[in-house]
Length: 457
Ligand SMILES: Cc1cc2nc3c(=O)[nH]c(=O)nc-3n(C[C@H](O)[C@H](O)[C@H](O)COP(=O)(O)OP(=O)(O)OC[C@H]3O[C@@H](n4cnc5c(N)ncnc54)[C@H](O)[C@@H]3O)c2cc1C
Image 1 (cartoon, rainbow, N blue to C red):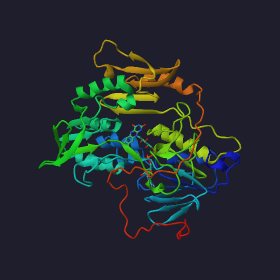
Image 2: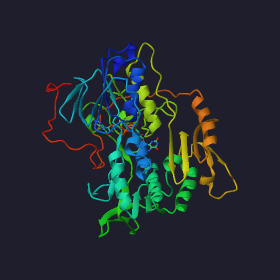
Image 3: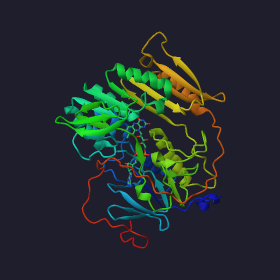
Image 4: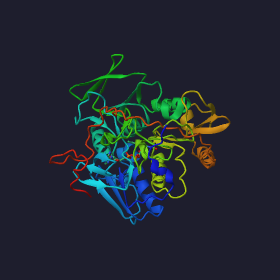
């Protein structure tokens, strides 16, 4: 059994002059800020393929969609005296960890002493759907949100494929704009993965009460075109016609550029408990792209696709990269997220097991009312006498009190896994959203190999 990245174990302060951060989302920016906060005086370069980053991605399915937020209101505030060098509208296409360079699609080559991988995830595009057709949308960034908003303004009937967090928020925005909405999901309840069975049931009832037509327990089979727009054919042969269709069927880590770099990218970049990427030196990963063992809950490496987790991972990854004489603590964070939709304030803290491995407590805020979610409900998850998870719907005060206690409690960490590093398998490249994140550039795009780095930055 071997632990890779052996030089980490020396405990010496890294001799880093230049840190390159690939990805200008929440995790990448948090890492850059944390490097400075910890006194890193070298060069920090943030490379990102989105020209308008950094911004607040959760706004894309909320205020930006309904028009309550302008695009510029979604900008992520970044302290301007941090001397960060922003290289926007550039996509990393290759990592060479031996030469310590990252190649961009502009053919520029970026050297690094330390690297932060923070490239997030991209939405999955349904197999066989045509790209770039009017009325067909995925939702990831500001450009997508803006295009979808324009479509929604003209739409009469909208179909949303996928009843997870993003799909439900889109449906909420559609209803807020007084459009008809059909929501399709293969499960019997909405957001059941994130909210657990109980809260999910109450929220599903509320969404139906709001007028969304639910087609639950149904799988999508085929997309046809008709004169007015699109027809979704479901697995029972029924059809859903709509002039706008939004696919929110999941996301896939953005790791294409790491192919051939000797990194395990099976469902995200495999890291140890300090977010150090296995198999390469002086490279850390953070945010949705990172798969790491969160020792607060389990030694099994997993990804977390949440805003606050991305922020905290970015900070933890920066600390690992700078590791001084004192070994950094494992990135044992408490996952948490929120959502606002259909007049419901949904908040989740900690783990919400869906396998029946935890005991539940359910406390209704106003027990007499039938609209349980709207009236307020709190669901607690307990294991071994310890509270491990909490879901609140319209129960902000009670949620905040308990969540604060959970966050303040000293973590009991499990033993880290012994990683046996295997030869990386090719990443499953299912189709991702065809919507371009940045406009295509002209000119040839050579693939570089070691020794060919002409235009080194
Ligand atoms: C519509 C939507 C709504 C959401 N709402 C919520 C919410 O309410 N609450 C919540 O907790 N979470 C929410 N999330 C999830 C949350 O936004 C993510 O977990 C968070 O943004 C992850 O941050 P990140 O920095 O890891 O990745 P990202 O925010 O995805 O940032 C990664 C950046 O890297 C860029 N990039 C990718 N590949 C390359 C490359 N090869 N070269 C250069 N740049 C690259 C990407 O374009 C992107 O700009 C939402 C997500 C979406 C899409």
